[in-house]
Amino acid sequence: MRLFRHELKSELLLYVRSRELAFFTFLFPIILFVLLGSSYGNDRIKSEGNVRGANFLEAGMIGYGAISIAFAGLAIVLVLRRESGVLKRLRATPLPAPAYIVALLSSFLAAFAVEVLAIVVLGRLLFSIGAPDRIGSLVLILLLGAVSFAGLGIGLTALIRSAEGASAVVNAIYLPMAFISGAFFSSHSFPAFLRWIAAALPLTYFLRIVRGVMLHGHEIWMYPGSLAMIAAWGVLGVVLAIRGFRWEPVEAG
Amino acid sequence: MSAISVRGLRKSYGALEAVRGVDFEVQVGEVFGLLGPNGAGKTTTVEILEGYRKRDAGEVEVLGVDPARAGGAWRDRIGVVLQSSAMYQTLSVTEHLRLFAGYYSKPRPVDEVVELVGLGQKRDELVRRLSGGQRRRLDLGLALVGDPELIFLDEPTTGFDPHARRQAWETLRSLRSLGKTIVLTTHYLDEADRLCDRVAVLREGEIVAAGPPSQLSATLPATEIRYRENGREVVLETDAPTRVLNELTAKALAENRELEGLVVTRPTLEDVYLQLTGGEIDEEVG
Image (cartoon, rainbow over all chains, first blue to last red; front, top):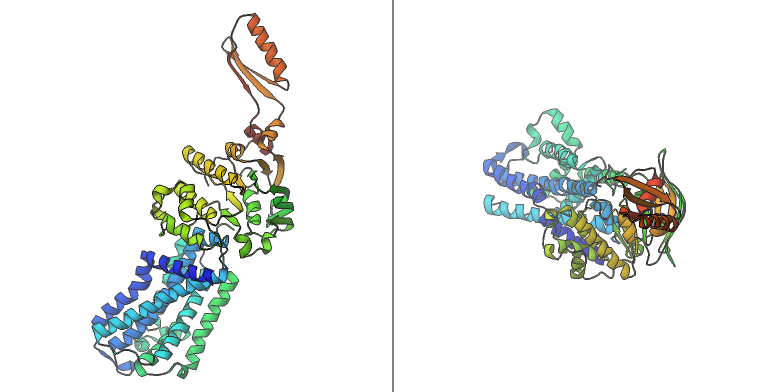
């Protein structure tokens, strides 16, 4: 437990220090929220039950933030640490592997929590969006989603073979996923094949619940099917992670 | 008392037999060197001792524990410098040392370690602004900050300039005087010669010679005597240098002439190494 607390503190410091990562995975969703919100924040979206654009987008950017931080950011950091040999070096210390993984995960969850707060506060200040009222359901779905995306992110590292490939592979997955799942725009106007793809993606279901909770005052248990999809993807990630996780750089054999 | 005991150690990667039946002991407080060209099995052997790799056969005990089954309490007593330095680029020297100090039950004071590895001037510098040699010294500091009983160093001075190497040697000597056990791999023979109490020379996964460096060089019989006569270089190899030298000098004195450029050399560890490993000294910078 002492080691876990020490590692968590260190991981938070490392997160704050990593400027490039912090910009792309942490600030980008906030910047997009302000930009897109300024462009269509006051429109009404008919296909989404006539909700205000800014409210729709706020939930979308929280979803985008979740995959950006917990999936993309975590996967990139893990691959960079693995390929640079940092993970191998850590294995020689008394720090237990579970304490390390949980501390790393917790630091990214903390970053995501700050992200959600920033988006909600900005939504209030810039676009006069009311504070969410179903706090319990909101916290639960955000936590479930972030942990599930983190599981997928860790699982994905097993498929990335070099530090150079990390950003490319991760971006090629999560940016289209955010778009197709409807984080930026309502997916109702998308062509059918995009909606079929969307129906398989975990972010689609995460956004469905987050929007239900934030825009319509629903509770999390009203979406058992969506919850199952998110959990199933998370389990897939964890299985991949357990089967393929490496502490040593790929090249070292 | 032995800190490390290795019996019949074997390890293959696919068809490649990297380590083919290696035996050795390292005593507590000893500096032990594993010598050999690249691909001789040095790193594989050390990484099995560090608990990174599983062996195929043989018995290994490190501080009384099988490294393949060792846990945190065992790692608490061990310091490791891997062949390539890996660290967080965005932390300063002292932040890095503090981070690693937190992993150990009885760490050395960070300030002490900073001085020990000669990074006092760079204590607040970020790792990404350090030179290669400075990173290597910080790496050594990270291995020492837990105050380990046993330290593994895989090519600790590869790529150092001569001045930095001497500094690193001083640090390692001071560790020995603290009673630490040190296992190092190197392909620098002068390093092994100056630092190690005993060395084992590995070639193609087998130990081809072992013992104190001075004793190893004694296994080559010939002492070499060189001088110039009428502008020609004369080289004599002999097992009886005293007699040969006596005859040479007596003759020169009788003829009232000087043995120009007279040099008498014992075979060095390098000569032994070259003979044992088939003439390869690699200059590769790892």
